View 1: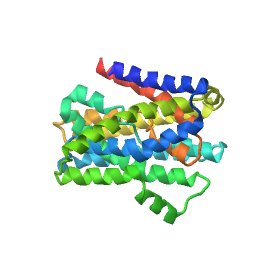
View 2: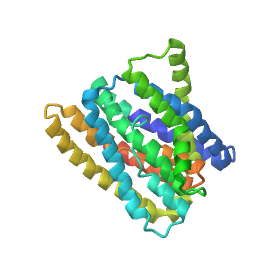
View 3: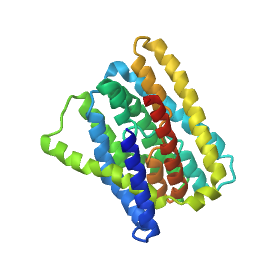
View 4: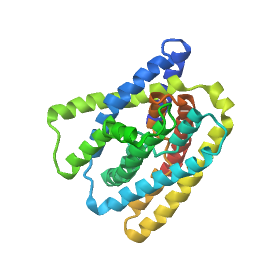
Length: 301
């Protein structure tokens, strides 16, 4: 797990270095983000959701995932809508508190710590978390974009949004016990394997330390909110889980760990696509990856 985290930071540093050397610019970063949202991320979603058998008996974990993502989001909404930051910056700051990065960041840890059982539990939790990211997250991105919020536009965007389409397809395949053909599995493995590299490279391209320093107050508020609310809601759901399933300590542990994972990469992708404030989103993602890495390192000791 430690080596994987080091790889993540190395790719972010590569993206930052390539931008400084003028090999990549934010224009190429926008192209990368479109490639992620329309190609590699949908493939990763289908691979992740179909790789474990989701269980109806564990739907409480999906509900808890929705609750955790929603409560953290509401904390950001209540605070950042009252600030004097520009509209685009407010939008990106709220987005960085919308959901949790589990599929890319935390799944390997869950499998390492609790084998496939823990991975299944985290996937169930992530199903609820993903629903909030793909629906409320994208709605917020539209709300703070130049287009503004229009219900008809939001619904149209959502039903044609590739990650949400992929998520719906993956759930259908999982619950219907329908497997993918071997050719598609091999194709998806190859294409999906590029997602982490492209995502981390894009973060590096949009990483701006001068901007982060200038907006240090807002980033500090965001980090404090994310982990304070994350720990609070995670612990509350941990206690509730022990009541619902008193003999299932793994499920409770997964809930608590999942609630303090990093900002989702989609907060950056949304910020780029809707022309919000990707530099703020990139800074928050980098900071939360570092903090959540330390949390996982302590837990895994």
